[in-house]
Image 1: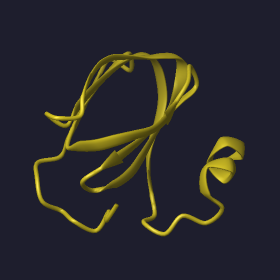
Image 2: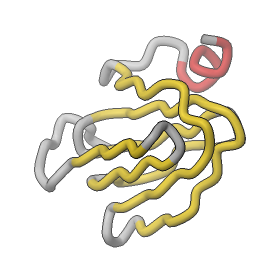
Image 3: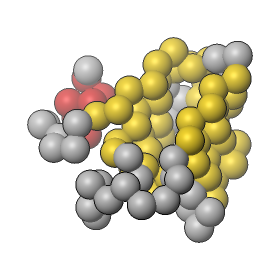
Image 4: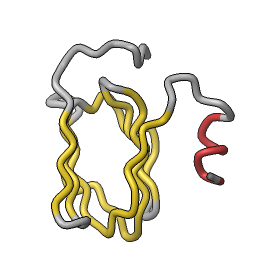
Length: 90
């Protein structure tokens, strides 16, 4: 999967720290109640928080909606050092 491709719209909307809408999502790499890792057209987006739930997932439309207590949104560099385990420990 090539993350350098910037084709397609990308939008991140956070409402009151408890509802997140993301457009331009290509894949969901992993998710649990504390972290969701999204592959977007602009790179890897890591969502951290508490009681996170994927409320809506449409990879065909490139849209994801997350509910829960959102603590941080971080874009990861394109070249991942250490992979998924380093993200889990970080």
